[in-house]
Image 1 (cartoon, one colour):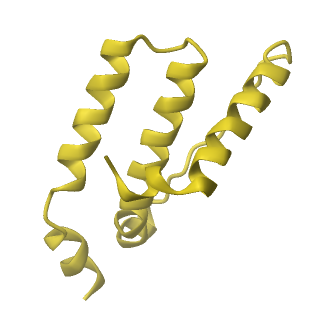
Image 2: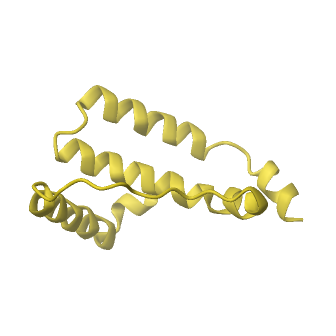
Length: 96
């Protein structure tokens, strides 16, 4: 379990996201945007850990909303745990 999952704020945020997904399910789909910058690679690597936590949170929401089955959600979670244990050497060398 990640430490942030124990926070009441995180748990409430997940419940809020569930509410938003349920409420907006019938809204028309539109195109999202992506985060990309070829000149800001070091910054991207710096925020990758935060993005990893976002993926874990979104996978919980997706599972609760029925977009992911249990096996897929578990696969994402286990991969996120493994990714989170990886050394931060590349990030540190880019930011030095």
